[in-house]
Length: 339
Image 1 (cartoon, rainbow, N blue to C red):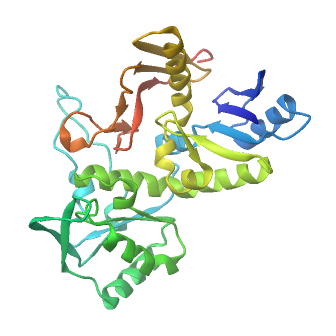
Image 2 (image 1 turned 90 degrees about the vertical axis):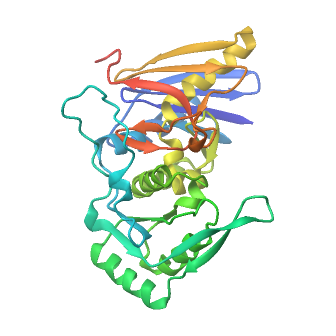
Image 3 (image 1 turned 120 degrees about the vertical axis):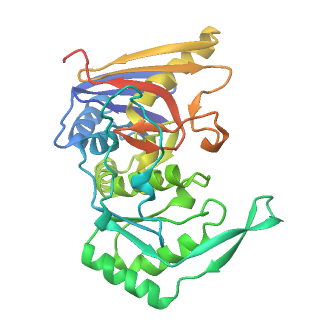
């Protein structure tokens, strides 16, 4: 099986081909206006005789879109009375001694936050068949509610929608029901309880908003890249260092936010195991940025691998936005070898 790993950086695009015992390496200049062009060029150079069976891609497309704010126009749909939850956020202060601390602006402005009459609540002392929390619907939205919401959303003309209802981590069905009802709008919809089934509403809501905002950007990029790479299959490195099928990465792009930097840590972790090391500190310097990561071989230190509510793991902040999905422990600075 011929596999090619591709890491697209701000300056260069690096490729490694593995076919049995054969290993080839190639480096080509990146093409920021059309990242896929450099990948196609590199593949022609590294594998001129035939197309690879699988291309595994590490990319910063999602990360750059979030950091620069070049994301889709996103609408939030939530329970009546809770549209300001994403702006209130948590009452922590990352800059403890700042005299005039500033909170990051919410990803979605207030005029794009919509409410619907729906409320679920846990049944006291009752567990579901799988041992989870059993829920009951105390207030259901009706056809008139959905029709009114759909009219508001059509007027707002969002590129994507995030549906974030209370307690969806325990019972995602109300979100999924609402998503089906709004499917006729023809825009991608992210359901928070499906993406991140854990409690702590703010973290779940904001993660879903980040995901929804990235879908229009990442989906189009991956669709075009997959088309240009045919017949090769395409997979994405995700923030944990593992891989994700391209179809899921297009639906859940928040999982590939740290796709590029995670590849270096994953490689260092493999080397640490072979060298018998308990832990490694990694330094990955590119042309435009430098990534520093930590990995313990005895227990993969993934952020948010345990529920945020447990108090043992904090969600990552990327561009000021909380993203509570699992990710390797790394930090990036905007300074590289060519800076």
